[in-house]
Image (cartoon, rainbow, N blue to C red; front, side, top):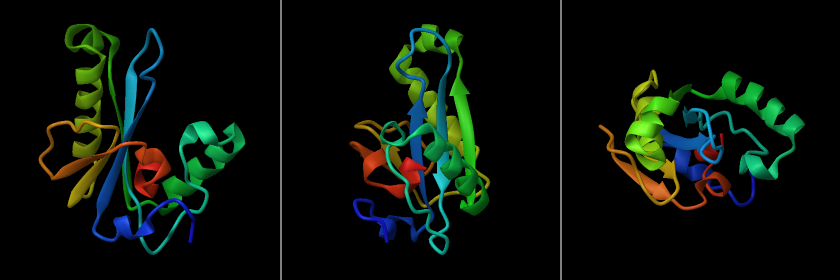
Amino acid sequence: MQTGLDFTLVEDLVAGVDEVGRGPLCGAVVTAAVILDPAKPILGLNDSKKLTEAKREKLFVEIQEKALCWFIARAEVEEIDQLNILHATMLAMKRAVEGLSITPKLALIDGNRCPQLSVPSAPVVKGDSKVPAIAA
């Protein structure tokens, strides 16, 4: 069992959702939604900023192999310009959850806001350090 991350939160098909690329001055914002398999825990998951590149690459392969499903989505520069970065991020997160091949019972979103989703959702501040599915 990994310390610091609550593996009990993955027992009811919980999707973790996080974004990357929100800081750059140009380029798309990319988000991912992941539903982990509670029978196949992935040790070492954490906020990607706290991991080495080699560890991130190793975990990426393991996530692809062990997750029940995952989906990567994006909002393009034109959408960011039209909507603003926050709303474009929410749009990309919505696309990621909607793209999952399994419908989660709950989506846990890294941060303090949630996009409008067709499933219940909850924000988790610093979720990528607390919830394995968000860290994935």
